[in-house]
Image (tube, rainbow, N blue to C red; front, side, top):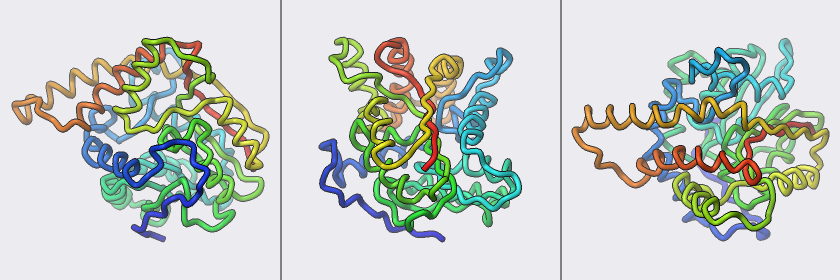
Length: 306
């Protein structure tokens, strides 16, 4: 099933002032303009940080990126020989969805995005890899999707829940709880603030710049987030901080930025770029500094079931 109609949230209890058409427009503009540049980070468009499982992983960024895909998918406990419907909430160009389709032959994956570039590029890659019958991308909003209740056996969000509104990310959790079948597993991997106390001046300054660069309303608060999962009936919640596991992939950011600038100069003889493309460079560089504030910020994998 494919639809290009975006369903906007109708809830009145939104937790952030940017929950408007303008906010969604900002996200779409960012990824439509800067989205192609993610190929500099990953030739396969893995639009997230990687997971370092063993020492040898540090020598290959792409290997760590796929390790992260494995970590998320393994926590979903996808059966090998049973038809399983999976939803990717904030799918990018469907790289994780395509990977899942290859790893789990009985699974079908539906990816959700509001970004035209991601939709078009993703469908192109799906067709190129012969996965049209296993992976579908739809243009929809994970804060109030069109899917019927209990449509999916599994659900995941890999570095996309940060784009949801509010520090508790209530709307995306509410939607996840609605479309996930009873007994279904979920997994979310993302960066989170560790508390709601006053932040150090420099951290707060960097934090505000990062959310502006990456078109985020805010990062989630891990305590509020887990409480909201429980509020909507999700259970057996396991919270794992993996900040040190992703650090080796974050270390590739400076090298990637230098490579990107050299390529841009070679191709266009100029570094004149739109704001969104510059923000896509600033964001990861500032993120390296943000990650040093372990008391205030961490990277987590949260899993459980309905």
